[in-house]
Length: 230
Image: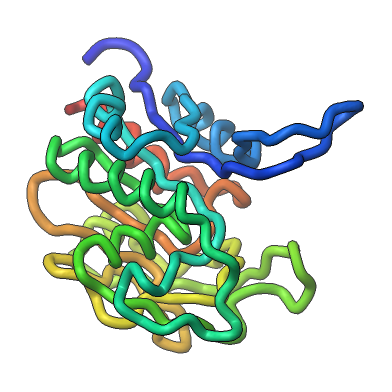
């Protein structure tokens, strides 16, 4: 392709959001996501929740897809009972983003899952999640922590970032059983899976941390390169 690739980023859907004099339902996205796409050389497009039946047509117009972070995945999606520490469900996002992931995988469209997005990728492929872990966010609500992730040699992620790196992190759930065809490609020091990928020709990567909150653009640049080549 010529020009900057078009990268779709999924969004929140929030009730009664306030800005200025307005208080309305809103589809919104932290600015770090589109800014990271732009810094990596792509054009960013927001993908608010829609009818899952439209996911394939949406993905067909994109060069790459990013599934953003957000609320906990509904445990019923992976056959588990809800833990008291699991957050409220977001059924519209679950349904829409799972459909986007499925469509991207079917079309071979480069796909990056961030935090919740990585977890949804794992769940779609039959994996499960740990509903609560400690030590992967700062003690204060809404404040990102930092910890080191170590790549698994020989993986796609290791090609992008071959050395251990300190990453911005904010999550209390994590991958438990890996989904079919997924490979763990980075771990935290406590063994938590921090990146997953789908080996093969199509570019598919999930990271548990939040690259949009840091200065390292390598993961997003890798997605943009893959989208440019597709």
